[in-house]
Image 1 (tube, rainbow over the protein chains, first blue to last red):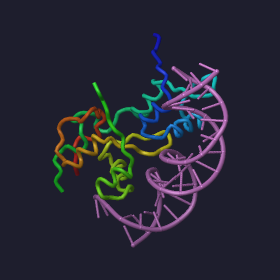
Image 2: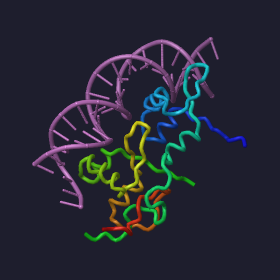
Image 3: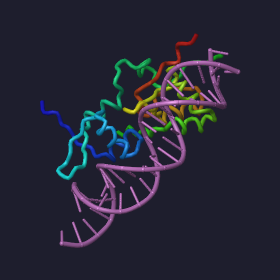
Image 4: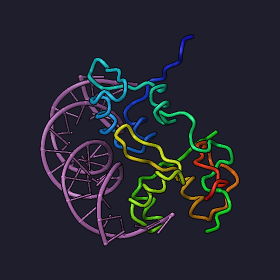
Length: 77
Length: 77
DNA sequence: TACGAATGGGGTAATTCGGGGT
DNA sequence: CCTGTCCGAATTACCCCATTCG
């Protein structure tokens, strides 16, 4: 089972989270995400790690993609 | 296929709805809209999700890839 | 080797978070 | 029931420049 761990650059992760590349670097410094360092000192992140964060740490979302959209039901007040 | 979902910040969504960022946060807390949290604790919203809410409560398709649906409107008090 | 683009580090401003109360 | 505002604290975003990457 060789998991294909694609390495992502801070800019890639930043675009995924809609944050600044500097912020992603800060997460690695805080130990909130695994980081692989290049000989030069730059950081690289595993796609598996990032994807897991994006999906949400908690399973069983609310409602779950049944209908999909949010609040799609009849809303009468 | 492209699951391109632009993430919006609470301030962006708040400006779209003409409400305070705090109110948007409250919607997410109530489960009325799906929210992705950054390792830092800040929330990000999907443009697809927000756009649908803006157009009206008509739902149906899960918009672009959102997969994450937050609550099917069926339940209501 | 040189070059363009991105990254890292530090510091400061803006935004967001969470709870409480109108 | 829902929203807008207050407070303190945390996180994030943008500025600079030197170094690294491909």
